[in-house]
Image (cartoon, rainbow, N blue to C red; front, side, top):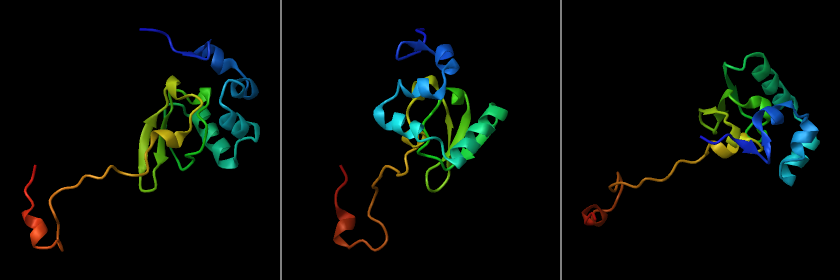
Length: 126
């Protein structure tokens, strides 16, 4: 199996980088977000992950950029209804937590339900 490389850097090299060095590898939107600094709630989540990396952490911070020190952490990201479990992998670096947790379900249509017209009940199924 090939070793994961992030813009020519191994995971160990990326983990040793400072936040400014890491942000220089990211896209402009994420770089700008990190340049402005982490919010209080993002700092709090990061501190919890540092203290207990093997514990499950729940958060509403869908817009938080995934940082190298978060790799391997188990995070429950809120989708508006519940916390969806997510394990941070190296491939997720530089993306945002919300990108991996959809907020809308896929629509699955079935037979006509209560209140349907009489004629729509007899439409032949494919």
